[in-house]
Length: 197
Image 1 (cartoon, rainbow, N blue to C red):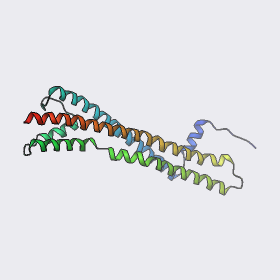
Image 2 (image 1 turned 60 degrees about the horizontal axis):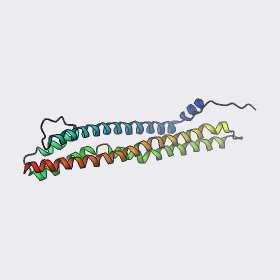
Image 3 (image 1 turned 135 degrees about the vertical axis):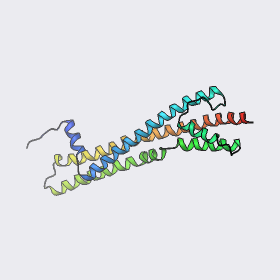
Image 4 (image 1 turned 135 degrees about the horizontal axis):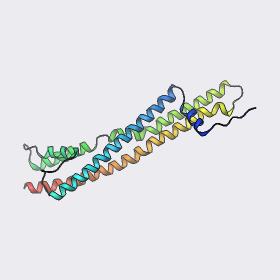
């Protein structure tokens, strides 16, 4: 009986190659990961721009003019410049517009964070099913025949968690950042409203 030892790279490549269901789950996890990281990076960049803008606005007092605005502030300023409403309603409208803008991508991020472990679990269940199916067709079940599908199952579980954990942490950080945005916007809008009286 000849025993072959596979390198770590060969085990990983064997675990990443599978049938259509396995490959579909792997592709879905990859797309979810790319989508989550894109949202996280764009939202982080938007938040940094918002904080820089908020500092400039704080230094200017209640003035809207002369400040290069990020997208969130543009939306807020458009709500303030609506002359057909009283100032208090303009402040409410501006704050609602800002928070609506700040919430883009959050639903997608929370969906990825909550569903990625289950997508990984689907890959796990499929890999175990393939391993059991392979064992049932053989007279003698050898570890070499079962190792590939079990490896797929374990890799899919790990990939599902690798997608979900950063998305969950990022979502929580972005919720906190949005609350900070709301606080700073409310402070500035109160000063603006006081200057209108």
